[in-house]
Image (cartoon, rainbow, N blue to C red; front, side, top):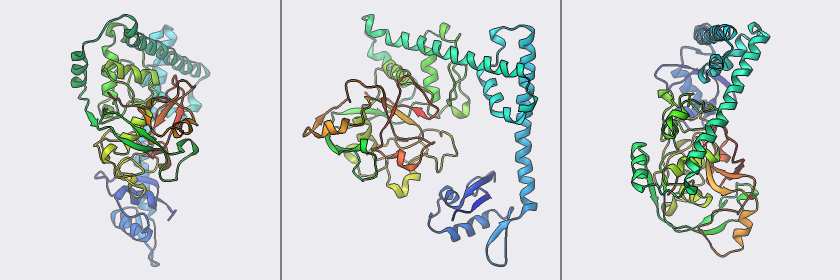
Length: 417
C-alpha cells in the first residue's frame, strides 16, 4: 500500500508522467476506493503499460527502457528552463553593471524565475551576482511596504474624512467583479468540535445565535484583487510593486491568465479588510464563517464543508490532492449553501481576534448572540485550512491564529455583508 510508484496519470489526457505517487494518492486522483490496493494497482498497470511490466508472480515492476525516454523529456524541459533563467540573470546583471540604477534590478517575474532555477546553476553564479540578486529581493521587500501603505491609507482614511460612499458605487463594483453573495438565514447552532477530533481551542461546544447575513460564494481571486489595486489612485500605485509572495500578481498589478481565477494569497489581514471595505462589506466573524461552512440552516452535520471525512477529497484541496499549489476557485463540490472551498484551497481571514480560551467564556452564557470575538489580542483568526495542510486542518471547526500584519502563500479571504 505504501509502494512508491511512477505512473502515467490515467486522468490526464496528455499522459503526463506522475512520479513519486503512492498507491492511495493515485487512487484518490482516479476516484478509486482507497482500501483496494491490489485492484487499484491492476487498474493503474492497465492504464500505464508504457512504463510497467507484469511479472510471472502477478506483481508489477518498472519497465526501465520505457521509463527513461519519459524522464529524459522531463529533464530536458527542466534544464532548458534553468538555462533560460541563467541567461536572464547574466544579461540583466551586465546591464546593471553599466548603470547601477533601481530600474535595472530584477523585476518580480524575473526574480521568481532566477530563484526557482538557481540551484541548477549555483556554481556559475559569481559573488557579485549573488549581491545583485539580494539587492533585487530587497527592492521587492521595500516596495511592498509602500504598496500596502498606499492602499490602506486610501481605503482606511474614509472614516476620518466624513465622506459617505454611495451604495450604488459598491453595487457597481460588485457587479464588475462578478462577485456573488449567498444569503445565509440566521439561526441558533452549536459552535465548536462536535465530532471529538479537534484541539482544545475548539472546545467547549457552545450555542450561538446569528442574524441573517450574506457571504461570497467563492474566495476572492487574483483577478478581483488586481482590479481593486488598480482602482486605488492608479497613477501612484503603478509606480510601486506588490510583493508576489505565493500569489500571482506582478509588479504592474497584472496576473497570468491561468492564475486569474486562483484565490489571491499573500494578503495581510489589513489588506483583506481594505478590499472588503471597498465593496461595502467586511470579513466574516468566526461564528459566521463556521456556520456558513457547515451549511447554515441547511446543514447535514458534516465535519467538513459539504462532506464527511471519507469524502473530503470531493470538497477540499489539501496536501493529499493539491499537488502543492492553489487551484481555481469553485472546482470542488459546494456545501449545502452552495459555497465553494470553505474547506481547503487557502486559509481565510476572519474578523475576530484569536483567544485560545474564548469558547470557555462563551460557554458560560446560555446563548451568545452575534459574537465578534475578544476585544483585543495579538493574533487574528484563520479558518478553513489550505492546500498545504492535512485533512484535520480543513475541518469546519478548526481554528488557527496568525499575525494581522503578516501574510503567507496559503492565506486568502472572502467577504460578508
